[in-house]
Image 1 (cartoon, rainbow, N blue to C red):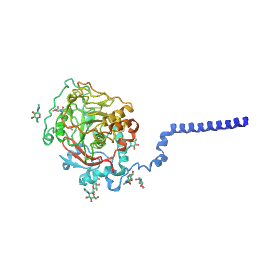
Image 2 (image 1 turned 180 degrees about the vertical axis):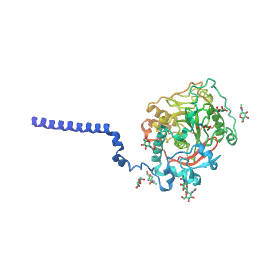
Image 3 (image 1 turned 60 degrees about the horizontal axis):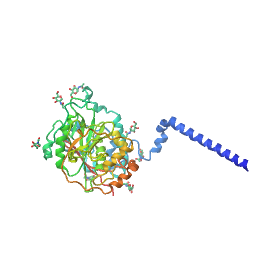
Image 4 (image 1 turned 135 degrees about the vertical axis):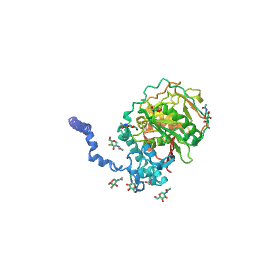
Length: 415
Ligand SMILES: *[C@@H]1O[C@H](CO)[C@@H](O)[C@H](O)[C@H]1NC(C)=O
Ligand SMILES: *[C@@H]1O[C@H](CO)[C@@H](O)[C@H](O)[C@H]1NC(C)=O
Ligand SMILES: *[C@@H]1O[C@H](CO)[C@@H](O)[C@H](O)[C@H]1NC(C)=O
Ligand SMILES: *[C@@H]1O[C@H](CO)[C@@H](O)[C@H](O)[C@H]1NC(C)=O
Ligand SMILES: *[C@@H]1O[C@H](CO)[C@@H](O)[C@H](O)[C@H]1NC(C)=O
Ligand SMILES: *[C@@H]1O[C@H](CO)[C@@H](O)[C@H](O)[C@H]1NC(C)=O
Ligand SMILES: *[C@@H]1O[C@H](CO)[C@@H](O)[C@H](O)[C@H]1NC(C)=O
Ligand SMILES: *[C@@H]1O[C@H](CO)[C@@H](O)[C@H](O)[C@H]1NC(C)=O
């Protein structure tokens, strides 16, 4: 009995060893030939059901979007086209020159509609990632001839005044002729080191917008960054969702820039920087910029704060899956981002309090979102399933004004 039992045990052990060997062998094959397998027809076949590699999943009436992601018209293209001069509604400008003949509401909405959204966004992000690695030869122009813009912040940079006087938007729009349509700017005499999209979540703050643009354009031009200002407005009457609007701003601004932006600054419209040394660029770590606000007596309200104005690179932002889409109403979404960044191992950088100074414009405080603490408690567990990867929205209209690009989006959850 004993012998038979041990014999059975020996067979079992041999079988186990064989099994382990097979597993190791398979692992080795995957390790050695993984890259080949990746490209094999087998894989391609397996991935087929999700979406066609060449064609995004798009309904036939959305056919135009299929030409994506072709070259994006640069702002110069747009200014050269007399039809789109000044304040012009454009549809999704990633498309082609036939754009102006297409009814607006239909087209813009179509691109992001229906259940294809998440896939589309995933693909967009894919291509955004690609953009950041492959330089577009179009945009090299003869920039290479120009010297690089300054690296060390010039010694004469320091505090700048703000003018909080309310002004008419129409009046401000006539200033700064050197800014290109859509609020885009490229330093004329040097090659910018930073390509920065300024993304502003927006609703009902027309009077702030004018003051903001009047202050920001000269400020950013002085800093010699290449930039665009994107005002993302929430359509409809749902509660304000700042974070989701910023996700939309991220995706849409990226589509509007040949070669793509590398740095994203998420900016409340009521905050105006008070010091030129506060560079609008993205350092190695995500940067919380509005650390020192006049209304809070230039003190940091709490150590983990990441709201107001914050800067992230393309890589940082996509690595944390963007902002959460779930914060309706005031508060929490910035702390959520802080947790995301921490979770993937980033540290938050800040300038000295004497540099990170901002003036805040007056406004009524919004009602706080009572669910924010509950949402926050889940962030570190769910962030890969809530963010850019699950972003759904419809672009209602994109308007290129002289000093800013206006993106009106319906971000309501589909019912
Ligand atoms: C993928 O492409 C093939 C051939 O072009 C087509 O028959 C099929 O319907 C496409 N699948 C999807 C999901 O679009
Ligand atoms: C523009 O439309 C015309 C006619 O509809 C078509 O022949 C042409 O190929 C289109 N151009 C582009 C760039 O799609
Ligand atoms: C949208 O497209 C449909 C046909 O596809 C057309 O009948 C309708 O007028 C369009 N709507 C707008 C607002 O252009
Ligand atoms: C979208 O997805 C939902 C469930 O995920 C499904 O019930 C609905 O039929 C889909 N709509 C379309 C147009 O495919
Ligand atoms: C991005 O680049 C990779 C290889 O560099 C390629 O396989 C992939 O299809 C590209 N994605 C898009 C959306 O262009
Ligand atoms: C660069 O551009 C300027 C004006 O845009 C032009 O005068 C100059 O000839 C260009 N240089 C080269 C090498 O193309
Ligand atoms: C602020 O702007 C207003 C309106 O343009 C102007 O009248 C006023 O002189 C400005 N104040 C300062 C200090 O520049
Ligand atoms: C660029 O150079 C021209 C000619 O030297 C000069 O007039 C202009 O002010 C410079 N622009 C900037 C933004 O430095």
